[in-house]
Image 1 (tube, rainbow, N blue to C red):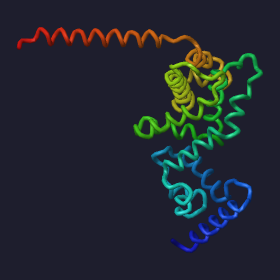
Image 2 (image 1 turned 45 degrees about the vertical axis):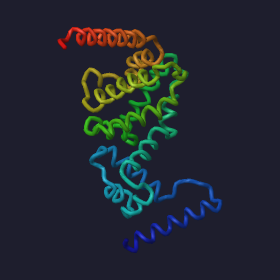
Image 3 (image 1 turned 90 degrees about the vertical axis):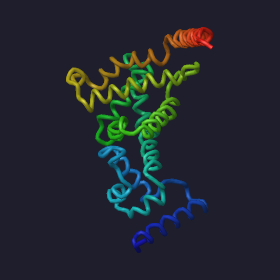
Image 4 (image 1 turned 180 degrees about the vertical axis):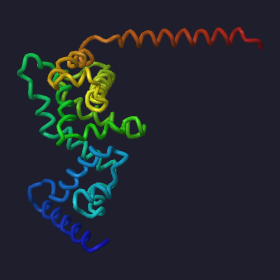
Length: 243
């Protein structure tokens, strides 16, 4: 390790020691700089195109300091994604139009918050992540789990039925598809509308997935019937087979 990195790590460890002795907890300047740079790098380059070395360069720190705080790229990505969705800005967006009768639904506010995350240059991490959703199954599964865990807690009224996972999956498919079509592909017919207009158009669909009756019970029953019929047919074929 070079002397500059040693000095940085020494300073960070000293700050950590001081915090343990009673200083108010919070991100150090270097750690916050790394997190800010990671948000920018993931937004610009996507998950695959981002490297710890690139984040370190953007933050103006040694790469070993990045590894000191975040052992690998997945850990850093989790921290950056958490910064996006747990930030006060996202949840303030989620509640920004709560008293507007045209936006007085969970679906409308969810669509509005996600679209605003996409169009604001300061908060473009969402678009950077969407670029890689189809590229890596492990990353895709990780991202879906993260969205489910983060956003499910913001849904009011909460989802209490046995199909909460299916409902949230439908919601995310709707919102991610909309963000991609509206801001990445830039379909002209959609781009003609403002963020608020798109929230009012698509929000009721999201509300339907969240709270309305869906044919999930019927589908589950049909599966049981089909499974029983298949087992019966298999047993019949086996009994008629020559011995």
